[in-house]
Amino acid sequence: MRPYYPAPNLLNVSPHSSALPVGIFDSGLGGLSVLRAVRKLLPDERLVYVADSRYAPYGQRDDDFIADRTLAIGQWLMAQGAKALVVACNTATAQSIEFVRERLPIPLVGVEPGIKPAALRSKTRVAGLLATQVTLRSARFQALLERHSADLRVLCQPGHGLVEAVERCDVDSPALIALLHGYLQPMLDAGADTLVLGCTHYPFLDTAIRSIVGEQMTLIDTSVAIAKQLERVLTRDGLRAPATGDAPAPARFCSTNDGTHLHMLAAALLGIDAQVESVRIPSRRTLELEANAA
Ligand code: DGL
Image (tube, rainbow, N blue to C red; front, side, top):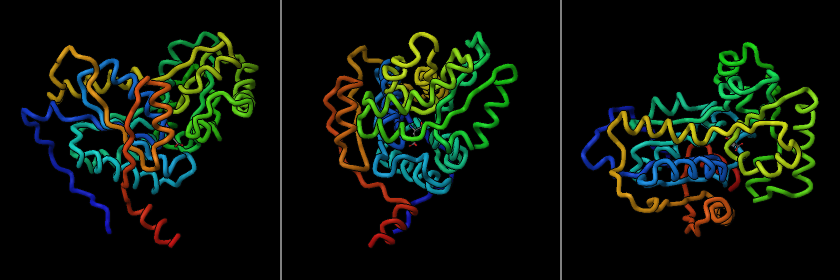
């Protein structure tokens, strides 16, 4: 079966489009930190969340794999009626947002590490940054760094092992604290007063990070900025859901694996007992993987 790659066309905004859901996608559970901010700012929006946990972490995948998954999941979310897509994954944004934007006829909002807010806040002019290896080596990230770090020294540290820990719902084990310590102590030693969380999984580690850095560092998480950008885009395109004044609209949670950990983290983070659907979203590269495994 070949995945469906539609030709780009214009989004037809009908009077009913505003009632359609917003799709939010991440390689796994990290995008829940973005979903939390979106629910808070835009409680009337219906949300469909996809965790591609079966293929996480993306930080260890090649560029083509990430572009292939991002496009396939965007198409799947459109087929579920999504009027806009939030790529709640720094890695997928850094590597493939332009590619996907050219191929999907709905507005896309991506995420990028908060270098700009770090440059505005740091007093010591030294900031630490944790992100995946794929994000750090991307041309998009390198351009971002060049734009905002003229007088800021940014210590870029690949967060090997951190996405895997969050995916298994480990946010405080001794092994995780030791791993984080190895990443953060050199930043503290170099005088960093700001830490950019350049991966949407990392806000789940804020308590563990605080246990190491105390109040010596300001943590920069961009999830609220992403929610605000989504608000601007929906308003610009006439796609804001009508206000009801009720409690947040229910979200639909989907996972490409069995969904157990998505259920656990949604309960811990959002305080909701989410029914998680296990979904199959085939793409060119995953069909190849399956064919090779058969
Ligand atoms: N949450 C993703 C990000 O923001 C994690 C990427 C991965 O799966 O390695 O980059």
